[in-house]
Image 1 (cartoon, rainbow, N blue to C red):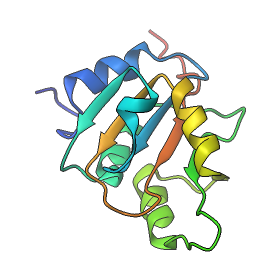
Image 2: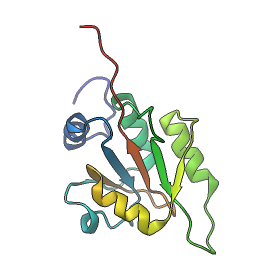
Image 3: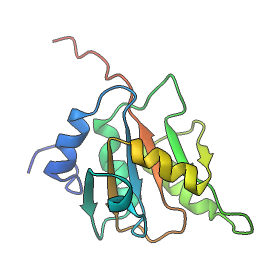
Image 4: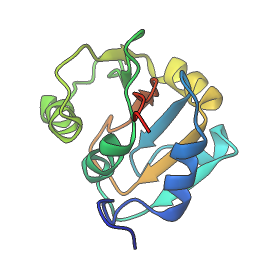
Amino acid sequence: MLKGISPVISPELIKTLAEMGHGDEIVVSDAHFPGHTLNARVIRADGIGADALLAGIIPLFELDSYATPVVMMAALPGDALDPAVEEKYRRALGYGGEIERMERHAFYERAKRAYAVVISGETAKYGNVILKKGVTPALGI
């Protein structure tokens, strides 16, 4: 175990986040998401809520400042979103900016191009989110 890193962040997830470059995207999905169907690089985080994963990822991950860095799945026509899900994710990320909503099949297409998919234990409907990685500030070493 490493100091300062949330215990919900697995060694595989740390490696994946470190490998990602500026503009790469990672999907943190709900437990129902067809991650294995859509992407070859899938990390399982069964039993861990997406908000806990987001809270663990964000200290390690700079969000893109040149594009909307947070994307969530939109509700299907005739269905409704639970606003508490977005609010829970905003709190976990400490993020007050724009969140893009994307139609389900367009979201799936984007997930195919993502660097990786993390399948969480989240059970909230439409509990899927994409994060776009930005440039990590220089440390001045």
